[in-house]
Amino acid sequence: MNDEKYIVKSKTLLPVHVGGGAELLLDPLSYTVKDGWFYSIHLDKMFIHFPQFAKEFVELTEKENSIIALRNLIVETFDPKKRDCWSFRSKASTEFEREFDSKRGGLNNQLLVQCMMHTNNRPIIPGSSIKGAMRTAILDERVRSKDESYEEKLLRKTRYQNRLNKEASKIVEGEILMESKFQISKDPFRGLKTTDAILPEDSTEIVQIYNVNPKKDSKGIPMWVEVVKQGVDFSFELAILNEKKFENTIRPFSIQSEEILDSCFDFFMNVFYDEVENFYTNSDSLKCHKNISEIKKICENIGESNTLLRIGRFSHLESMTFSGKLRQPQHEKGWGKTRNLIDGEIPLGMVICNFEKMESK
Image (cartoon, rainbow, N blue to C red; front, side, top):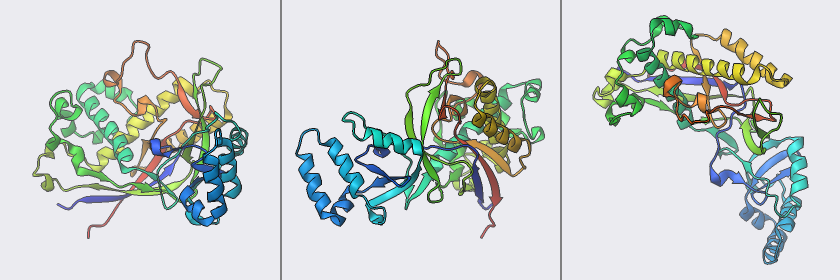
């Protein structure tokens, strides 16, 4: 039996942010803004191209409270035409440019920006993030298949009730959910491989995220992050490996493409519809309602080879954990009372995917 391989052609329905970690939490000595673009810079390359800049930079570092002068020197010297002086760029909004200009003169104002990973100026959504989203949806559906009654299943929005995996309902909860000793040899996700998604150049922008409580008028402290814009097309490869490679150890729990499609659609659609009802129904934002209406329309007309994923930071707890009684953590004060939204209006993370099977060689 040959491996099944798919090209998964995808589009961002909402902006997506997958953080690049502490090393990509950049301050104004690591980036600059020029003509509407945010640039992650290489100071060492600027030293080579601009000897006078290198001399002045070193002299300034020897003085106290020189941070403002250093920021200004970088802005005045940087030339985007010197391609090796920057690693990647992202579209900077008018608001961010204004914020950058006002705060670079403040001694204590760092204006940190959380960026994504890049290769050759192309942003990356790691395969681990994609596979993690699939894993959550599939395991949630398997546990529901085991625990729910037929009537409870009918109450949920499901797409292909007749395609529920009968074998999956017999899953051993301890082995898959790790509630008891977990056997890695029986983990079905060993047989599921996803590549990183390399997105187009200049497909990101710097946006402001607010933590919003719909029951309060005030917004939380804002943060600036890099996100993949809405409507960006990208693709990645997915492979379901031949079980014989694992000596049949995962056979009782093996994953099929239909299960990925159905579980991800059902899980992420239900989660998003619940989020709309709990957080956005009474919103006054026209932008928010426009985005939600478009996503609902897509969900209502989605084809059998398509599914949904919620990827990255700001997808929120509901999209990243099992549902119902399995959802953790369960705090005394509850959870899920706020949303992280672009400009306090636009949610993040939703992607539509189309599976195209690759011919075996």
